[in-house]
Amino acid sequence: MKAIIALQDGTIYEGNSFGAPGTTWGEVVFNTGMTGYQEILTDPSYAGQIVTLTYPLVGNYGTADEFTESDLPKVRGFIVREAFTRGSGFEVRGSNKDEGLGLDIQGSNKGTDLGFYIQGREALDNYLKQNNIIAIEGIDTRSLTRKIRQYGVMKGAISTEYSGGELLKMLKTWPEVETLDLVREVTTKRAYTRTGGIGPEVALLDLGVKKDIVESLARRGCRVTILPADTPAEKILSCDFDGVLLSNGPGDPRKAVYAINTTRKLLGKIPVFGICLGHQILALALGGSTYKLKFGHRGSNHPVKDLKKDRVFMTSQNHGYAVDDKSLEGKARITFINANDGTVEGLEIPELAAFSVQFHPEASPGPTDAAYLFDEFLERIKCVSDKEKLKVKNM
Image (cartoon, rainbow, N blue to C red):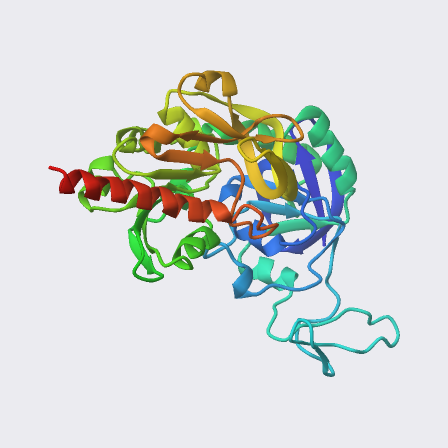
């Protein structure tokens, strides 16, 4: 089945449909990661967006529950150069044991059947169909990526139903994605708890949280309570949590006024750690400002410099906005910068026991160089707790 992409600048690409048929629209962005397509599809930070993958072949290891970052895919559409669609699924045909991965894989290389199949995996095409995600393959993703880099992210649509001219007219009637409060689309509707042990009790303000952020805390023994994004500060403080984590999430941070107000009231009363959108929310709560990047940072290979340790490491990133460093003068200390463009990647306010990073320390997908930041968060909680105990002892 044929499919087309229409961009708001009038560009039209023709390709082949895979996933679900139909029509969808959103902000067209690109991700430079070589693997991790299912984590990308299910990352709530991509709500409202059509994601283009720059890596040319996608789907060759199937999909599985272990790779999901939320309950369902959150992207509005998916664009790839070539989708791996050979075979009917990812069942084993023949059995060769790969001792390194512990997986049964197909060993046949007869004829043109050169793919491999992993037991228990679902084909990407089927996964997209089951979750009603409209996708397109067979287009020049290099050309599309270069266009976004040159002119910036833009509104676009994928369709198996309409002509390019019809889509361009429809695009004019749909709102700009940055005008939407996308956090409300992805936040949990009710509080729930993930218990990892008998460690600190952490309140996680869900702005569109990835599963592996919750799991990173649980693996360290935390009892994590995931709260709706509009939970007031008074309710959080009344529950006697040891710390608060502001999660990642989609859209313009300025639209999440409720989260900014909550964070402002929490500062100085409880340790706070912000990740991605949570980093931007913390900056806004401090009186700083944010701005939209031309094409954002999305991928598993973004170098970040730790200004305190004078070292550079690779990070996983997914954001379209950044914090204005000048707006934080006298309000916070910059701790990390992007080694490519110098944008703010982290900040801290020691006297308020608050800090944040723009990148993803949990990775998923990507390098785990920065996972130590979860340990740093727990250390800050412990320091505050020890000071409180000393204060009570000396009264």
